[in-house]
Image (tube, rainbow, N blue to C red):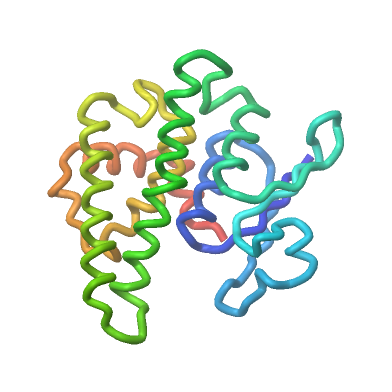
Length: 206
C-alpha cells in the first residue's frame, strides 16, 4: 500500500523522500507549502501537531493499522525497521547509527538552520548571532570530517539512515558559507552519497 508523504523542499523533508526512494517503497507526495503557512492547516496538524514537515501516514502500521508519524528521525527509524534495511536490527551497529542520527537531529540540523537564518534571511544584521552559528556550524563539520576520516559512512562501513539524515543539510553548505574543500573527508562522502540515484531523485521531491 502507498505511504502518504507530507513534505516540502527543505533538508528535513528531503531526508524522508531519499529514504523512500532508497527503500523502493511506494509513496504519494502531498506538498505542504510552508511559505504559505500550509503547515498550520488543521488537517495537517492532526498528522503533525508540531506544525513541521515532514510527516507520513503509513497505511500498514503496527498490527496492520495505519500509523501517522512526524519528526524526520522517527520516520527514518520506522521505515528502516519496517523494511529491515538501512539500519541494523540490533547490536552495536544499530546504536552506532542511532547516535549519529541523534547527532544530526540535535546539532547538524538545528545549528545549521540557525546559520541559514542569520546569514541569509535575517531582516537585520546580528553580528553576534552570525559569528555564533557560523562557528558552531564549522565545529560540527569538523566533527563530521573526523568521523568520516575513520569510516566510510557515519555508522561505519554501511550506508544508512544517519547518512540520509545528514546529507541534505550538507547539500546547503553554500548557504552556510562552508567550503567542503576545507573538510576533505566530508567532501569525499558528499560526492559518494550524492552519486546514488535514489539520493538524486529524493532531493527533487516535492
